[in-house]
Image (tube, rainbow, N blue to C red; front, side, top):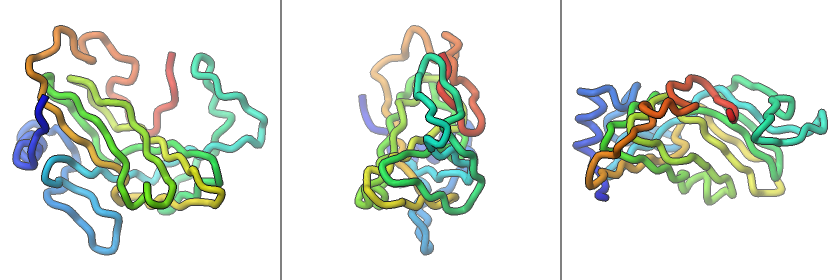
Length: 184
């Protein structure tokens, strides 16, 4: 696998709608940076958050997930409680080409504050808003800034196309919009 460069990302976004809305170049004007970089795309976090709370003594069960353990907030600044997490989504909607796998890494600005961003790989022919998990590993409340950079997506070109894409196997998170909770 090889890493796709900025000119490929730009072309795929502008001609094929791979990333919408697309920001050409890195934006840093007093915000956590976002946009196309040398070998990736720094996506923004939207202003929709599901913040984990245990007010109702909820149990986290991926087979029978209940949103009772979350509070919903639409805000420009999300405060994550100590040793807790929040779910959010990217501003950008992604459409992944068949010969591409995408991995995501958190921004160093957040990592240096003890905030970890987790995303599973974006598979060939998957599309949707990406659900982001922000884990606050610190004993202090932590802020996440909406409409600013949250993570970087790295696009990997496969040596050959897969036999079955995410779309063809009708993946359960295909076409997701908004913050999407676990599905079985």
